[in-house]
Amino acid sequence: MRPCSTVMHLLLRCMRGCGRHSRSRMPRRLRQPASYIKLIFKSLYFNSLTNSEVVLDCILEPVFWAVEVVTRWFGMVFVFLVVALTSSVVFIAYFCLLPLVLHTYSPGWMMWHICYGHWNLVMIVFHYFKATNTPPGYPPKMKNEVPFVSFCKKCVIPKPARSHHCGICKTCILKMDHHCPWLNNCVGHYNHRYFFSFCLFLTLGCMYCSISGRNLFIDAYNAIDEISQPPYTYKDRMFHKSVIYMWVLTSTVSVALGALTLWHAVLITRGETSIERHINNKEAKRLAKRGKVYRNPFSYGILNNWKVFFGVEKRSHWLTRVLLPSGHTPYGDGLTWDIYPLKKDMMPV
Image 1 (cartoon, rainbow, N blue to C red):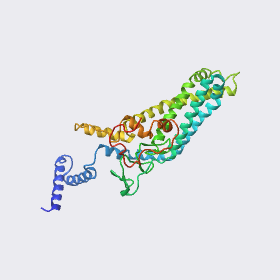
Image 2 (cartoon, rainbow, N blue to C red):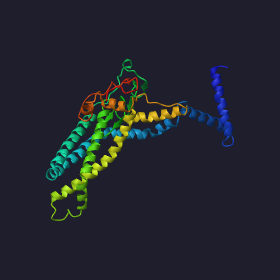
Image 3 (tube, helix red, strand yellow):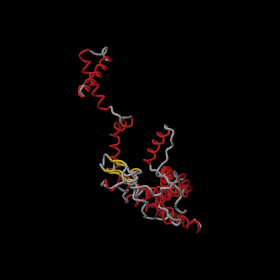
Image 4 (cartoon, one colour):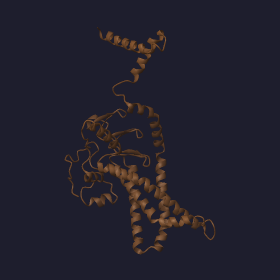
């Protein structure tokens, strides 16, 4: 029998089989057309690659598209909000709290507040500026320049290990963690450290303002009904309202951003990004069914993961590269990840 005849024979058998199940439901003359339509419909979606995740992605595609458009167009708005809210807290600290510190605190506490507050502010401003203005890193366009492990169907370029496509930036990103609307930028290989340091020092700054301003907030909150009446002046009312605004804002941000910072700290400890966390979980479950244990190939141990992330090569770098502003580039080029072929502590503490 010829191949074409074989295919036609199989189609006829399928149509006859479908017709047997529907004899009692429709007239004889409609059975064959209905079976043919049903067969065509099944051929449109049935293949070996179709699963629940593919179907869910197709259903949610309009939602993803809307989120991408909103994030892309409102990126500058989010950046403006970060700058405006941070500037408002700094303004209140300088014009409301600093004069109070200079008049009421002892010299030792006064020097502590001035030194710590300004150091924290410099670290926040530096890392936010670098995180927003540093490109995350993009893979080369030419195939012979990339040690690729897969191919991006959207960019139509080879993808190195740990690279992923960003639907908002419309390009692939080296060691992509996520697209951050508050930075209006992707977090990738070259600005991941800036992003985490910004979150860390902003959390510390908000906690500092919340803790140090707690007593002032309680006094201002208890006097909220009295400040609208004499002998309180307009300046007194603005002072109390500013203290309440600053404490509520910094306390809220310290909790929310602190949780995000803690989550990223856990990821850094494990040597993975936010995207890789989901991929590794799925891979671990898949291998667990086969009785195997999945190990992250990009993890070099807890201490080394932090050293690689911060670029620490010697002990002094914990001060010069972590606790002070530093614009040094990360390890490697984001294309290969054989920094430590042997997974042991190979750098001095």
